[in-house]
Picture 1 (cartoon, one colour):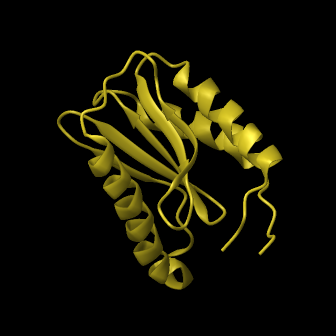
Picture 2 (tube, helix red, strand yellow; picture 1 turned 135 degrees about the vertical axis):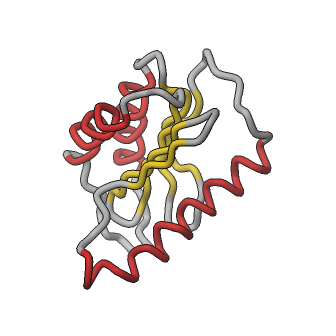
Picture 3 (cartoon, one colour; picture 1 turned 60 degrees about the vertical axis):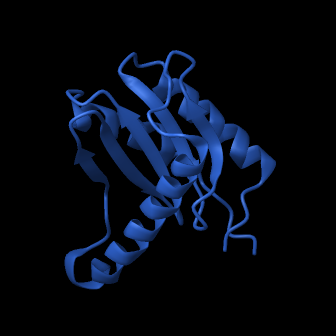
Length: 131
């Protein structure tokens, strides 16, 4: 597993905060391979739809789903992003190395716009491969 340095966490936090400035975004977080939040969180203007235990469960579920989908990378190519539109929430995951950027937004938000912004902000952040 990759260990994220404090400097890298700081860069990830800055990128998360920039995306959270969009009014329709409720949450931006970087989830490590174990499904734990390492940077980011909820907007101050948003009350989470789930309690803390369920939020942690969602983080683990998103990471597990991503890992399972990677089984097809050899045949289909690597995942650029995963977008799921629900009645009450748009959920987007964008891989950054072994980690995931998890974004939630209002259901009618333009997911392509959010994905482009996330890729612009997070593509420049490299996470060291210290083990």
